[in-house]
Amino acid sequence: PADLLNAGTVRLTHGAASADILLFGATVLSAVVGADKRELLFLSRASALDGSAAVRGGIPVVFPLFGELADVPEGAVGRDDVKDAGRHGFARTQTWTLERSDDSDSSASVTLVLDTQKRDDVLKRYPFPCLLRYTVTLAADSLSCKLAVQNTGSKTMHFHALLHNYLNVPVAGAQISGLNSSFRDKVSGREEAAASGSAPLTMDGAETDRVYADRDTVEARSAAGRGVKLSRSADGFAQTVLWNPGEKGAGMKDMHKEGETEFVCVEPGYVAELKALAAGEEWVAEQTLSPL
Ligand code: TA6
Image (cartoon, rainbow, N blue to C red; front, top):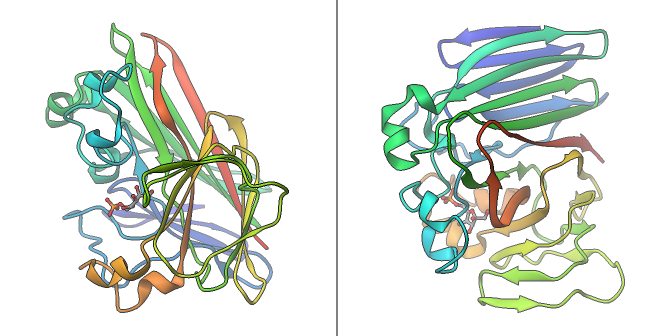
């Protein structure tokens, strides 16, 4: 079932599994699944949860701009559409509306919507009316997040979309498998060729910020061998971002002390270019997280 815990948080439960979703940003804050009740997500204890800022942890929804406008090459198709969208866009800082909840024998789910046609402040930043529909489904051993973007306006719109998963996987010595393609390294500013072979990548705690061309299953395991598997069903998410701030975490005011050592962000997104979506069309992407 889905219960409104207070005005701002929905709690999904299914058997022993539970998940909390903040209406602010449609941010999944926690997902506890599996026989051993494993928390899949990291949430900073210093994060605001009162709607004053985006959440540092959980699964913020990034839309319609990933990063900064300066990250989008001049002249890129659709760049002008997102010029006022702001860092990581507005979806993570708008309060979404509870549309429905469903229960079945195998899962519990909730659907939140954000209709930008009803938000004058959003339309000023991104003048493309659209309906975002986000369905979070909790099963005994997994959490799925499905994002649908419907263009309800009369012109083609352009956007990035990404689920900024903060996985509860300590970064020191973490092994990431499934990221074998070429990538853009945002720390060095370089494009890097694909590594030969498919050996897992080992994280060393240094700042890492990469956009991989990989779009298949990615597994992140701690040095102790446990972790989270990210898979996708709809094929909307065409890249994968790997991020940890390293030492920069200490300078983040919404990060608890040494919180940056406790997670790895593995984020499915459509971020290599701006997606064009014609009037009346819908775009759908979905991820599933499960314990390893
Ligand atoms: O997804 C990686 C990233 O874009 C990084 O560049 C990084 O700074 C991070 O997201 C967090 O952004 P935020 O605005 O939440 O501080």
